[in-house]
Length: 119
Image 1 (cartoon, rainbow, N blue to C red):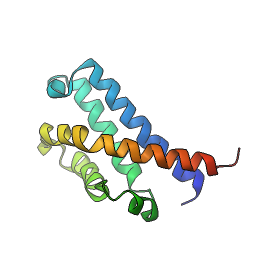
Image 2: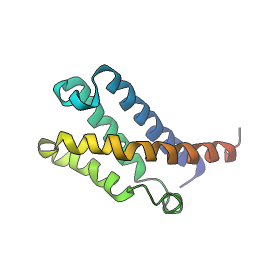
Image 3: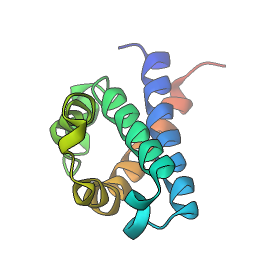
């Protein structure tokens, strides 16, 4: 994957995490499934994160082994193909326990990619 494409995918992940955080300002995480607009918006952002994460190089993923990359990719499949069976508590766990580490890792990768990208 070329650097510009990698930068775009990392940006998509970072912006999706930011959007989730903003959606949860409207309705707190513990109650987000009670607000259909927020719930669907969060699901969509998680799908974007999932799809973009599939395009991060193995080399980069290996640098951040604390991220459950495979599970992140699988979550997107669940949201797309088994949406009716997705437990809101699973999404809460992902948001609470996995997104903070992902946000840190992607922030580091973004910074490095921006430093390597010619103007």
